Amino acid sequence: MRVRFIDTSIIMNLLEIPGKCSDAERVKADFKSIVESGEVLILPFSTIIESGNHIAHIADGRIRRERSLIFKEFLEKTANNEAPWKLYGVKLEKDDLLALAEKFPDYALQYEMGLGDMSIIHFYEKYKEETPAVGHIMIWSTDRHLSGYEEDVAIRRRKDR
Image (cartoon, rainbow, N blue to C red; front, side, top):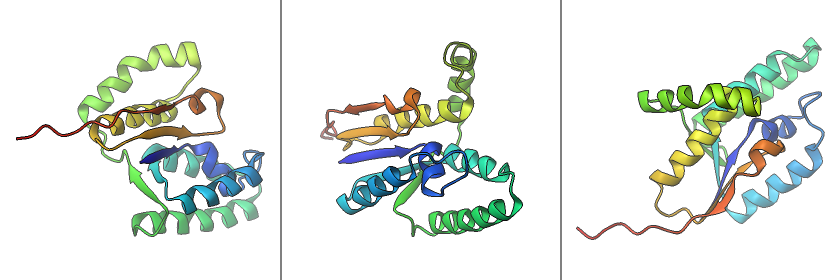
């Protein structure tokens, strides 16, 4: 099984958000072939939040409204399981928050990374632990600091009871 976690940078290109979509043609072409190939796409909740924030800050009100309506459909399809991805990372447990809190000072200082990207990484790692049939997993991003997350994971078999 091939799994891709979708970063905000990918959504910005798919929705052609002004100033944040310099790779739109490539991302759209890749997206089409990824969907056709049957890869599992995971949409982290933090990607939704960050994407909505970027849309809300579009300077041109006409474009902001246009992209907001497209994003509204995007969210509705996600909620109704009509999108080509699955929502993940919605439930932030106490342990998840404590893990993010522990790492935040170092990530903010060393990598200038915020909680959105940190949570994508956190839930990427959590997904690997919870899903025994993952073969290949990656964070799909145009950002260098996230695009390096890609690996083949040995498929774990469940122990016989």
